[in-house]
Image (cartoon, rainbow, N blue to C red; front, side, top):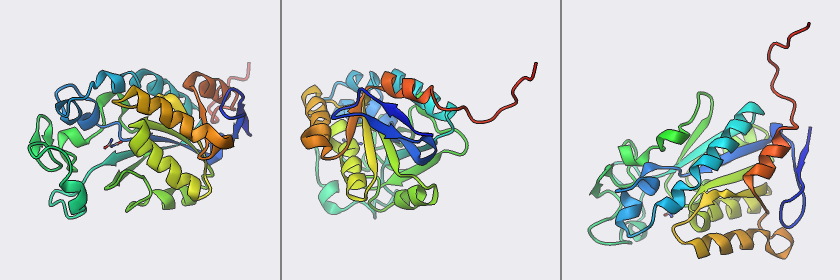
Amino acid sequence: MSVVVGSAAPGPYSFDPSTTALVLIDMQRDFLLPGGFGETLGNDVSLLADVVPPLQRLLAAARAAGMTVIHTREGHRPDLSDCPPAKLSRGRPSMRIGDVGAYGRILVRGEYGHDFIDELTPAPGEFVVDKPGKGAFYGTGFGDILTDAGITHLLVTGVTTEVCVHTTTREANDRGYECLVVSDCCGSYFPEFHRVALEMVAAQGGIFGWVAESSDVIDALSLTPQPTEARSQT
Ligand code: C5J
């Protein structure tokens, strides 16, 4: 059964929760925790922390509706063999991918900082996609997961809006997925980039997809029949 987010920009977004995945992009300690990689680069990580409560509520609603949930993590193998030299050489020399930071080696799989923040850990049965790039499709099994699950629509959330959320949305749009970016469930260290990135998604009649707030998506999901559980027959 399809539901509609009537307030979405540039116009109503219709989706069937059974063929829609909630995608949480890179809600990792390296990006979000005070004292971590993101903050050491001079960023105000509280801008990303604001994303957590609405995203927890949206995740709870998606789970209650029985939706497919996919969590991604940006990071690399410990030997960095999947990190292109061009990516490795970026950033400050003292704070690059693979260097030891406050939460272990930065953006290296298996390290504490690379893992999800405690508030948004995957539940059993949810997918975890480790990605070496900014987009979720490149070098991963993300596309196969979507195909196998019969997914046609994506609710895209996470950090950062203009980097990994945008790249994933663009990749998905090119592959024919109908994407809605959930505005208050995405965050950036740069408020202006966040605002403009969201505008870009919905511009020109929805060149990359739709944008809406989580409360409106949750309201739409609340109209979904809940997965069958024992119903009292009094
Ligand atoms: C993400 C980044 N996840 N900003 N990475 O957006 O480098």
